[in-house]
Image (cartoon, rainbow, N blue to C red; front, top):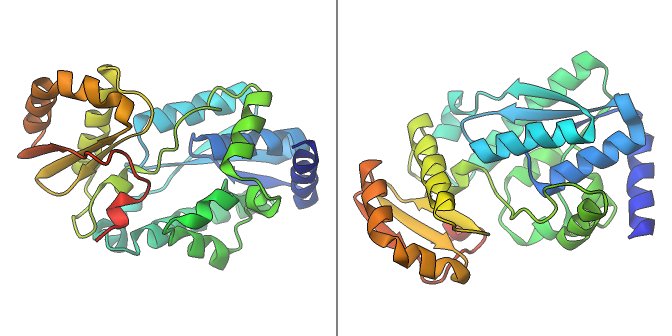
Length: 263
């Protein structure tokens, strides 16, 4: 780990200056910390403000950047202004990532920053991620991946650096909860965010996804949460129906990364 960490810091120093795309998760937060250690004031964290970002993620990004001490910029992403994002087909992540990163690149150029980096790592290669293609096309750097960091390495480093998000579960954007072909709207994404916050308030812990299949909500959570979900099943069903779902289901296979990619 020491050798990997030194390699990461040397890599970032080689950029001269950098804008780190900060989502609020452990990967981007660890990269922001590394960038600040390597470059000081020549490193800036940039969070794309969007309806696709949950309130929890937004709050973690703001609080985490403040704890690190890195300059933090909130940049309007306007993701839902693009029809190719709203229509939510299998390439949605590509279009969304490309539009966002183009905005961050333009902002970084105005600020005189030499590079833009994101928190992608080698553990990301096993899932369907069309957004990765956008990163490559735009020349976005992924120093964690370049230096051989897997998810477990990142968590160990985050813990060693005292980052509060070191054991935070992975959390993709809210759009990843919506079945392909179901249009993305601000109201639909807010509904998902509200439901997940409600379930957390019932002591649901760890991985949690509320998958939106139109008028059907499919709840995915770790098996340790089944007793809580079943205990509160009537309360959960009533709340979700208040929010517009006609049917509420519990996925017996539990949380699975990328389950919306399955046909």
